[in-house]
Length: 224
Image (cartoon, rainbow, N blue to C red; front, top):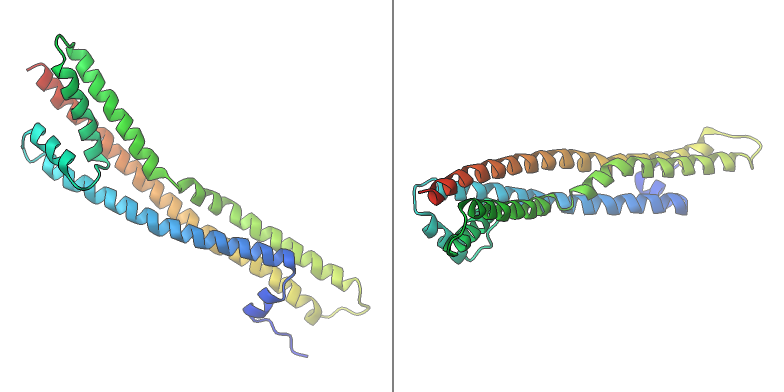
């Protein structure tokens, strides 16, 4: 008799343990792709917002006017705009205090910017650890399903007097499907994690450079 080795038949005919492994890997893959699409939008928006704000900041306008524009915007300040808003708000508040020390004013503004920077870093790195976990564990989950399926195939062979390739092929094939699904879930997650981590690092470098440049401007203002 001809053995049906179609993918659907192999999945439906697999043992409950192997089917559970396949279902888990499919779920991890779907969640990973959802996070990949969402994270790509988040990082793309962060990059666009950064470029837009840099054009405004270096246009030569008044910082107080820019601060009011950012504060009055309908959109929440993100990234570089949030760092600027936090730093300038604290700078203005401390500067209005009578007898405020110049060094304390600058230190307070820098501290507020560092808090905003950390908040932005946490936002950008959200869910990246999940992609790293999927990328590192999915092959082993698939390998577990493969080993279990092969074990079942060889146990079934022990109950027959004459083994044939047609008897063992379906079990081995369904086991290898689990390995393939593990790789299918892992490879996109690893590629996305590496790409997004690099994007986050580049954004954070730009933010840190902006903090240094903005601190220099505030230093000149406070000593003016």
